[in-house]
Length: 246
Image 1 (cartoon, rainbow, N blue to C red):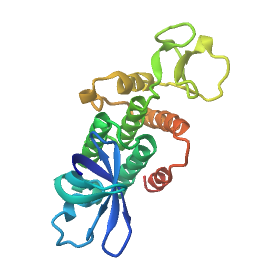
Image 2 (image 1 turned 180 degrees about the vertical axis):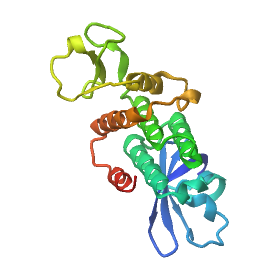
Image 3 (image 1 turned 90 degrees about the horizontal axis):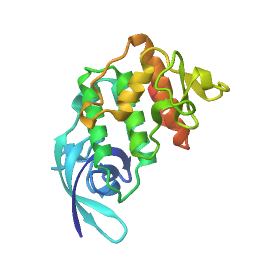
Image 4 (image 1 turned 45 degrees about the vertical axis):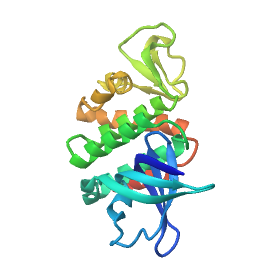
C-alpha cells in the first residue's frame, strides 16, 4: 500500500551503517515512523529531504508492520536553525514535546502548522526565542486538550483585578480577593496575563504577532513551561540541554 504525506522529521535514529529510522509529524496521519534505506549516502536522491527538521513530501510504502520511505522531496530544510546551537536545542525541545503529545493515525494539521511556523520564526531570528517557546508550549497544550481557562477569575468571574494569579493545577485564573493559598499559583505581573490570553485565544495566523516588555518575558516563559511539564508526565531531556546552552 502506498501512502503520500507531507510532514516534518522530528527524530532520526541510526539502525545500521547505512539505514536509519525517521519519525515524521504528518498532516493527516499524526506521527509516523519509517525506515530509510541507504540514508547516509550523500548520493541518495532523497538525502536532503530525510534529515532532521526537514519538511518534505513523502511517498511511503506501508507494509504489514512497518513503513518504508520510497521517495522524498524537500520543501524546506530550515537551514538557518543549524547555525545556532540555541536554536537547534529549542527546535529539538519542540520535537520531543510533539513525541509526547501526538499519537499515530490522528489528524494533526494544526500541530504541523504550529511546528512549521515556530521553526520559521526561530530560524529567521526576528522574534525572541522565549516568546516562540511560550507560544509553542501553550498552543500545543491547547490543541491537545489542556487549554487553560483565562477568561476570568474562577470564583468571582472578574475579568481583571489588581492582582491575578494562574492556578497551575486547574489551569484557571484566581484573583487576589479569591485567593486562598499560594500553592502552585503564579502571580501574573505586567502584561503576562494579556500575553497568555493572546496566545490561547488569538487567530492561528496571528499568534506570534505580539510583544512583551523584556523584564516580563522570563515570567511568561516560566509559566508556560511549568504548565506544560504539569501535563507531560515524563522528563523532557531536551529542555535540560536547551537551558544549558541558552
